[in-house]
Length: 219
Image (cartoon, rainbow, N blue to C red; front, top):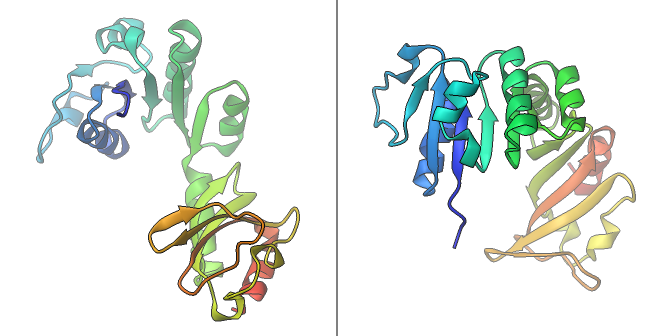
């Protein structure tokens, strides 16, 4: 059974609203904070958790929202400074186990990641996804790592690889097969595994080697 968490969300814009709804759908308790009272006016079904009007870094407001018992704090306002300050308070003062901050400036995101605060650099992530969709439309980029230096690609195994051993497809330090989805089930590539028709592959590739990956796939 999944552990039921209490999550405090700082910022109730589109991202905060989506998180709150989905977390409650999964059975978690949620409380949200936003300095704009109009942010709480929803046309769709409202969340069950409480909403608090105030700054996301205000300790009184954070405590009303249950920060002392929170399993996770997500700072997702539209301002980097507010998110950074709130995340540091949650991490260093309240010792929240899992702290996440939405950061627009990639340089700041990397700095705070080294301080133990999980960051999502919106601009870097979106830019990497857009570049991938434009430059490599045949491959579906599932996830990017760091500042986009590595990507996880998803694609169906091409005809030229059916029956071949998965290691023939790998390039040390550049291309690595992480998972094979076969007939609805996921398997870990181990010695002896060969590609079957209709396998779905998840492959981590260094950004500079995406072209090499396309050539291996015969694209």
